[in-house]
Amino acid sequence: MNVVLENVRDLLPGLAERAVATEDARRVPARSIAELQAAGVFTMLQPSRYGGLEDHPVNFYEVVRAIASVCGSTGWVASVMGVHPWQLALFPEAAQDDVWGEGPDVLLASSYAPVGRLVEVDGGYRLSGRWSFSSGCDHAAWLLLGALVTGPGGDPVDFITTLVRRSEVEIIDVWDTIGLRGTGSNDIVVRDVFVPSYRAMRNFEHSRLSGPGQQVNTGPLYRMPFGAVFTNTVTAPILGTVQGCLDTYVATMRERHRLSLGGGRFLEDPFAHVALARAASEIDASILQMERNMNELHAAAAAGREIPMELRLRARRDQVRGTERALTAIDMLFKTAGGNSLRSDHPIGRAWRDAHAGSVHVANDIERTLALYGKGAFGMTVEDNLV
Image (tube, helix red, strand yellow):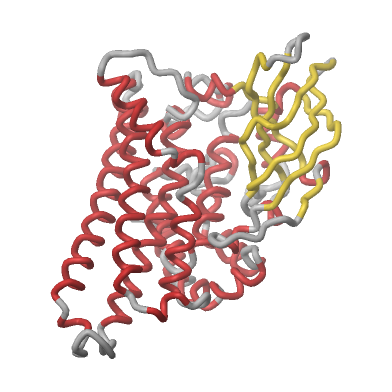
C-alpha cells in the first residue's frame, strides 16, 4: 500500500485551487511545500536510518504523477526535490550527517550542469560559478551543484557534484517562462566557497554504482543507476500533467456543445473518441514500461546481481519515449479542446505548456538517448553519465 499516496490524495483539491497562484508567484507556495512535507513526499527515497521511508521508486513516481495531475509545477518540484535525498544517500556518510543531522525534513535543490569551477585546495575545493534551472531552490537548505575540476592547462579533468549550504549561495530571481512557471527554477551564484572533500562526489561513481554512501545505506534502492532513477524523476511529472489534462478534457468536453461544424454535442464526436483513446493509451504504455523497468532494476539490486547494460539502456529508452508519448497525447487533446484552452488560466492550456516545458530537460534528449540504445543493441560501447 502506498501510504504517502493516500496522504497526497487529500491534498489534491487544495493544490489544484492554488495552481493559478503558483504560476502567478512563479514558485510553489510555502503552504504547498509544507503540506507535501507533512505527507512524507520528500522523504520517500530517503534512507530509513535518517528518518526516511526508503520506499520503492515506483511508489514515488506514482505520488509525483498524482501531484502533477492537478499542478504541473508543484509535481515537478515535488519530483526533483524528492529525488535529492536518494542522491545524497550516495555521498560519504559525513555529508549525510551534515544535512540530516539538522533533522529528517531538510530540503535540497540542485543544478547539475557542470558550469561551476573547482580549484583543489587542502582538504577540499574552492567553488565558484553561476547555475540555472534550480527548481524549488527558494525552499531548500542545501544545494547539489555540478562543477568541473580543470587541469594545469585549463582542460576539464573531472566532473563532480558538490554539496553546498543555502547560506553560502545567492539566488537570482530570473525565472519567467511559458511553462512550468511555478517551479521557481532560479539561478544560483557561488563566489569562492570552500567545499570539503567529503561533500564532493565524482560523477563516474554514479554510473559505476559505487557511491561511498552505499557502505552505510545498504538497501537495494541505493544500488540502482542514477541514469534510471533521476531521469524517470523528470518524466514522471510530465506523465502526471498529461494524465491530469486527460481527466480535465473528459470532464470539460462532456458538457461542451459545438458552435460550428454543424453543432452537436462534443461527446458524440467519433474523432474526439479516437483522440481520447489514443491519448489514454500513450499514457498507459509509458507508465507500464516505466514501472516494468524500475521493478526489474530494483529486483536485480535486491538480489545483488550486476545490473546489465541492456536493462540500463532499455530504462533510458523507455523513459525518453515516455516523454515523447506524453507530448503526443497532450497535443492530440489540446488540438481538439477548443479555443478556451488558450486562456492562460485554463487547466488544459497550462498542462500543455508545462508538459512541453518539461520535455526540454537534458534528460529528455530523445534522439541522442535512442541512439545510445541502438549502439548498445549493436554491441558497441556506450559511455554516458545518464545510463
